[in-house]
Image (cartoon, rainbow, N blue to C red; front, side):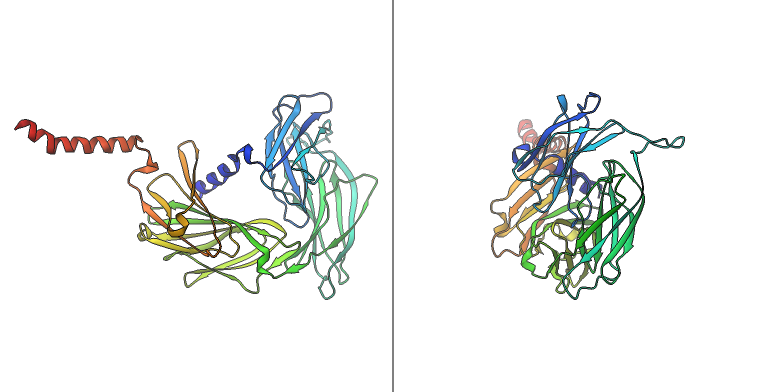
Amino acid sequence: MKKLALFLSLSLALLSPAHAAYVVKGKVLAEGGQSTQGIPVVLIEQNPNKPPQGPVAMSKAGEGGLYRLELESVDSTSQYVVGARLGDSRGASAPFSFTEPTQTVDFTLPAPALVEEGEGEAPKDEVVPGPFVFEGQLKAEPGFALAGALVQLVEMTMANPEGRIVAQAQADGNGRFSVPLPVGYKHSLYYLSAEQDHRVAGSEPATLKAGVKKILQELAFLPVSSDPAQLSVEKNLYFFELMDDAVRVSEILLVQNLFEGTLDLRHKPFAKQLPTGATNFQLMRADGTVSAEAANGKAFLSLALNPGRGQIFLSYDLPKKSLGTPLEAQLLPNTKEVELVRTSMGFELAFLGDWAKNVVESKKGHGQEVFFSQKALVELGQDKLAFEIEVSLIPQKRLFYPATLLLVLLLCGLFWYVKIKPQTGA
């Protein structure tokens, strides 16, 4: 799992700037004229219809506070905020949407305003005295039950961009709710998130104002679709690790809900055939509401996804006898790309049949750990992946890799001793 985590971090860190489809650039300054060179700058996605997540892009400010953030894709339904931190001073830009591939965003970090803390405690953001109350009403199409819907108030900070729940309440039969907040903080963002029967609703993030104690919000549950065509699998990544008694396979499905609301496909779970001999199947992590179980060599996936992109992590083991044997694995409908990734020692991977055409190979590394990747686009009608795990006696395909060089020298010496020396003696 450590190798998988390292590979994922490398995949994000090694994106070539030449392939960045969207760019945010600008200047971050600080009140009082402090230098901002070298401070971390992050891009945060804000979408009340998605669970909170970490930064989608990161960089550091250069000379004069100039920064540049790059990312491959954006969500047209989301807003974005550029944030930075200088010591105890945190600040962020106004929310914006991508109207052009390149956005210019300048902002200034406020001077730190701190309150007294107990001895040994870390200083906090400036307190905005309360109490506050978030009131409003949930809305949905006729017939959808609103009573008991859980409404949560989420606080986002630069130190915790994923957010944390600070208060919650339940809606009544008419969808009305009231969520109290005793005290808030000046530079934090607050938004409401509601959930009922796997459907979500949310408000836009906003800051608190000392003179506004009652914040009125109206939340609407998103529509629901059960059309499988609204599910797109941008990539099905297979990560292979050679263990002592098995080959560990981790599948990562990068999925996208194309529908403007919730995509609920639980009524008909997807049956995904696993490679022959797969055992120890488990669902490691998923975005949205996903359940999975394995039976008769297949993984049955039950999906309910929020709008936008998400990830599904699966894991299982293949027996060592699978080495050198052609294998098949089923893909979900609308899969666009497959990637096979292996570590550097002991085995190789190969696409078979039509999959072997137009394969793109690459290599990523960190320190002594090297990962080898092969990618192939899914052609029309291809729903089963064909591949093979091959035993490799010469690691990494490097002719003069030290172990390989030693093996070549030993073979040459043996050949000389058996063939050449007897002829010379004669």
